[in-house]
Image 1 (tube, rainbow, N blue to C red):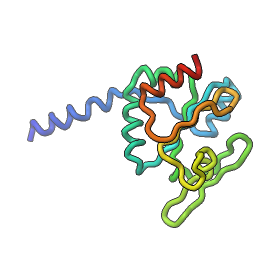
Image 2 (spheres, rainbow, N blue to C red):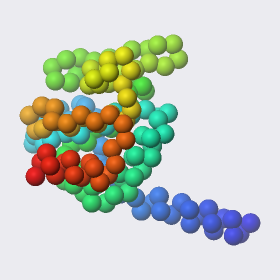
Image 3 (cartoon, helix red, strand yellow):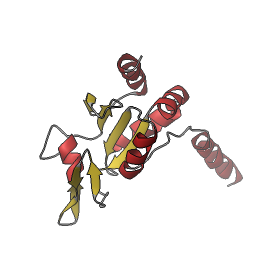
Length: 154
């Protein structure tokens, strides 16, 4: 039993060493952009998406990527199916649309190219002037994110 406890403890230790991307909300973002405009990364995901969870873990584990994002970008993690508050984005108002036991936020649909059901995870990268510079559906590996960010913002 003692060995099992030690084993379980050791399995959890790496989780405490993971870096964290500083995330914000859309309302935080508007205030930050007024103070100092920076490019913005919007990561749209759902809690049920396994790829989203694995991807998030891998990204936060990559210290170099976390540093690049934290120092140079605003980062918004947006749960498309559980975020229920009204969001003002680029001069428009977006709301949560319930559908039985679930629902989806209108902003997730507006940002997605697939207007009926977004592909998760969905990555939107905006420049400091709020213009779309990159759109990516599905898994986005840390190495590819770094390459793309350095390509777009050398």
